[in-house]
Length: 559
Image 1: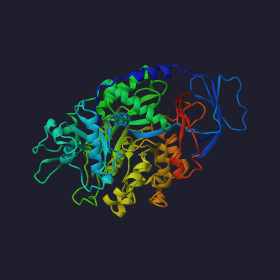
Image 2 (image 1 turned 30 degrees about the horizontal axis):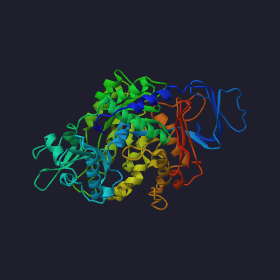
Image 3 (image 1 turned 90 degrees about the vertical axis):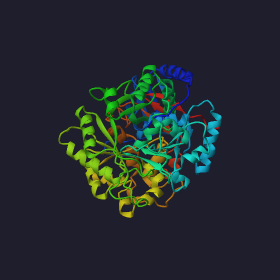
């Protein structure tokens, strides 16, 4: 996901934030009078009533109601009978994309092209000093448009300045005529391999650039300054902590992103944990050099591996399918690399023990990744934890292969609820059998790691938990769940956002389970996730978030 541009912003708040956070001294702390829930070694729920945290921010003891409470602790926190769960782990999101999305034009709430045009024009009028109008979040499927929007329709909102707006999934961009002019895009411009340009009846670019073609315009967008990146990181961190997310796998870390993460760590204002996956092998080498980085800042930052792309997204019809789309008979999607190119990149990373995280959405893309892993596992042995990111559409015959070679299916439950009607239009019935097949993956022996893909979706993990266990959306539809046989248990859902998320990032034993010796990362919430309905789980309120034995977020009291 490319990063968006901002005007210069004063970051006065970061200094105060760093001072407050760095001043929080670790101390021997007892958090009691709580109703604690965690996932045990056997995958079942274990309950506890108190946490004893040592001076280093690690859990010293997990206590039940039958245990005597320790005496002489430095501090005692009364949980007032509230519920405590492990800090939630989002195993696939884009940290800087989330932060920049919160600072620029957000179209994710629009329900029609006309509504989007009004919002774009309003934003441009309110920001006359911005050279480019930058934003994201549009979705022609949600608008019921039946086609992509055009440059002319964007010109109707803003014509005097360049406008560049990413689609909600980050796999297509919408440009106005001024943006295409500045980028030098003309009728003669050819789409690069792995990309496409929509054109009008005369063959002129119509304003939409899919996957690799987006770089034709994106390359002309001014890049953010370091202070812009730091502000975006601070905003993203605040958002995630407010949802109880204490750790996140950042998929597509650039060298500039990494430098911002390091500035936050050095400055004492990195409050959450970031597991980085570099944006391609060049960034991997720049950041990691000879191999994955060590854990930095008390386990708050590590470069684990590299993110590779094999195809696009279902919404922009870039997901690579074995057979053409049901609603586009001449299109099988966009393979972004050949099989040989994929294997070369995988070998380059595996040679130095970087973990592979490969984006594959369509059934052809997933099949290619599975074959590549099978071929390379004999050469690159050991604990590799090959990750397939999204794994949305799988040929049912290929699902068994997810149980081999320790493959991790890194999936986003909210994609199923958001994409349901679109998937039904794009795919025929036999292919839907392998769509968002969480339970089948588990049955095959795969490990599931759950996330949100924010800012593509909201980072709200409780929406993800509800979707995983019910296969229903925020409206409770469809009744009984969409292909409900693929729903997972409450225990598997919680594990996917906690202990299995930690395992997917080589972080087990450090955080993710609330057991003695691990970091004291936990969330205080207002209800029991094991007893609440999906609708109630979606309404969960985060009361406080703790990372490493220190409170880093506290909700405003209800009035």
